[in-house]
Amino acid sequence: CLSSIDQPIYEDESFYAICSVGGFISGWSLIFPKEHTFNLSNYYFDSQFIDFITHVKLNVEKNYGKCIVFEHGALEEGLTSCGVNHAHLHIVPFEESIEKLVKSDGELQWKKIYISELANEVENSEYLFCSDSFLDEDSLGLVAKLTIPQSQYFRKILANFYGIGDVYSYKTHKFEDQSLHTHKKLKKSFSTYVENNNL
Image (cartoon, rainbow, N blue to C red; front, side, top):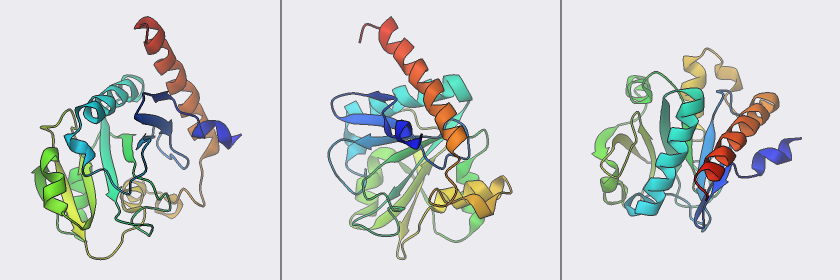
């Protein structure tokens, strides 16, 4: 049953991580703040958030290999929020470079920035953000400010890379078995971590 995918694989008092419905790549995970917001631009200053991302990313990488991160930064309910009108960061196992893929797409103008600069860079614009090597507040990534909303942009880019562009949408292709397997594997991995560290 898909409802178990909605159960956190890991959480603290401010954030939680779940597995992604429609995760056509094994290990695809999401991080949400518990407080409602439409984007994460002001959270990249928060050391607790950075530590949470790092911990989740390292655990996913331990199980699935190198990961990229990306965010669809909305300002309100609408297309850029991908139908989930609450800010979330994607952590996706991917050995290649998402930054090279989006730059070669040619659809948007991308700028290389430190993650700590993102809020000032985007100001009051919707945006897309991605990074090949997110580690801490000094990490670099690419940001594109949007004038037209972009729904499921990174899902399309990744699906096209794998030659499955017609199944990118989590709304119509949920990949239930794969998502449930990811949930089971990561839930066990995080539970072991919590037990071993007396958390």
